[in-house]
Length: 113
Image 1 (tube, rainbow, N blue to C red):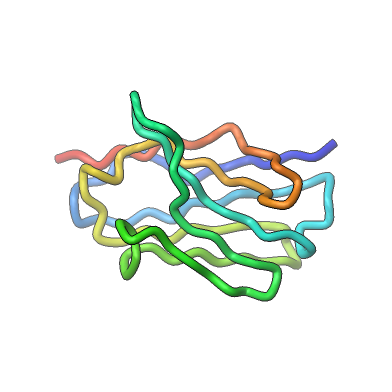
Image 2: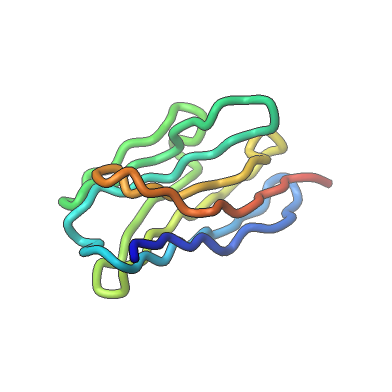
């Protein structure tokens, strides 16, 4: 059964950093483009960062230069390194298998002093 499990969320002060992980199982992780999305209360889910099977990356303008998406195909894990966090980054963060359309359950990130 295909599964994506996010971890690493939590409460962080403005200017701080967090690293999210998404562990995949049930499909050949290395074959697929993977992405991180986020959703704030009352807003639509938005794309944060995306990484292809060939390691090409792209970022939303709001996180470019602060967030880094990466993947470890040997361990079927997707990462999102988030630096210089601001309260506007507060959201539930989801990973997604773009090709197959699977979502994880999400992990909460709260940026607050």
